[in-house]
Amino acid sequence: MAPTGRIPPAFRSLFAGLRFPWQNQRYRLGPGRSVRKIGVAALKVAVPKEVFEGETRVALTPAVADEIRKRQHEVLVEAGAGRASLFADEQYREAGAAIVGDPVELYRSADVVLKVNPPEVHPEAGRHEVELLREGAALIGFLMPLDNPEAIERLARCRITSFAMEYIPRITRAQSMDALSSMATVSGYKAALVGAGLLRKFFPLLMTAAGTIPPATVLVLGAGVAGLQAVATAKRLGAKVEAFDPRPAVKEQVQSLGAQFVEMEVPEDVETAGGYAKEQSEEFLRREQETIAARLAKVDVVITTAQVFGKKAPVLITEEMVERMRPGSVIVDLAVRQGGNCALSRPKETLERHGVTIVGAWNLAAEVPVHASQMYARNIANLFLHIYPAPSSVPDYEDEITRASCITRAGEIVQESVRKTLELKP
Ligand code: NAD
Image: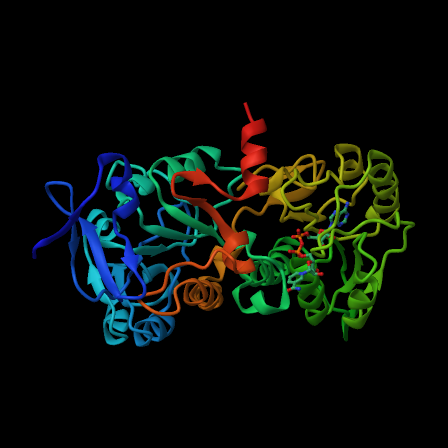
């Protein structure tokens, strides 16, 4: 292959892995500062095995890998990547994917890596996943930028183009990419089952020859996607369910599931333009704690899902409130990654305090890995194909979805709110 041009060293990294769409050709930096034409390129889309502790999900299922391949992309899957979610290497092979045994080779050959969790140090390779990527490659996944500033800075430094699933705008056009909602659905469902499993009582009303057993009472705090799924699941199991959320639209949604909405006076301006709850005042949280406290003595299971995007989760249950609960009650705290809605919950731990079982539910979606992976794969593939509809595509940053989800590009942190927050961090 003959060199097709020479570029000054200062601009070299701009050309690494670059493709010119009008030519559908691919160019790479070759020896002697030359840019080499390396032919018509299929994008190499790589799916590594997740290295995050306890993770069982995988970013692509064989069926979705097949769809990506049919769009003229090449799919590479790390050996064993789908094993914990019951997708065998053989199924990926049948879907036309290549199985790669060595993770270092997988990362190095990838144009785009699809992942579930934010990049971290790879235990086998002994290096950070970001550093295993080629300069100019792209990474798509949950990046949790505010919890992982170091990884985000590394992505920028290594000139990786990164897209975060949680920054996809919640607009109608992007609903099929909404992995936050998919994973919240799984977690909400599983939270109700965890609560039912730990409660030393029945959930449903039972009328038996041995007497009548009243239904358990479940209180759900925060009725967004996860909360509503917890409400629906607890209802299906026969519990009496109550729920609270400060957003006004939620009351009707809770009632339509057959649950009771906990009434409380809320400020007018509780919601952002994007449909998220705003951070509430201390005065409001104090009143909310009082309203909850008044109910806790009659509740068997509390499922907490209250979150405020980009902020620490509000504390809705204090230690004094736990003390007032009946012995044997259960709290399942889904907001524990964001600091927790219960003051006593601890990440990944199930504790007993004042006779109450408190679950710091860290990664419930990983406990339903088959369907969680199936939903996630569909969401991430829709985002990937939106950004790269064809092998020759380059991301269109004029597009709202592409622009909003892009966190780093060309050596910079380009997502404005992430950049501002990270600048403020010590
Ligand atoms: P989330 O996970 O950020 O928060 C969970 C819930 O906690 C929210 O319902 C929020 O109102 C609630 N909350 C916040 N502070 C609280 C407090 N002090 N007490 C009790 N609850 C509190 O939110 P989510 O579930 O990801 O989404 C929230 C909403 O976003 C959805 O219900 C929906 O209206 C909207 N949404 C829109 C789309 C779309 O495509 N248009 C998609 C998904 C979600």
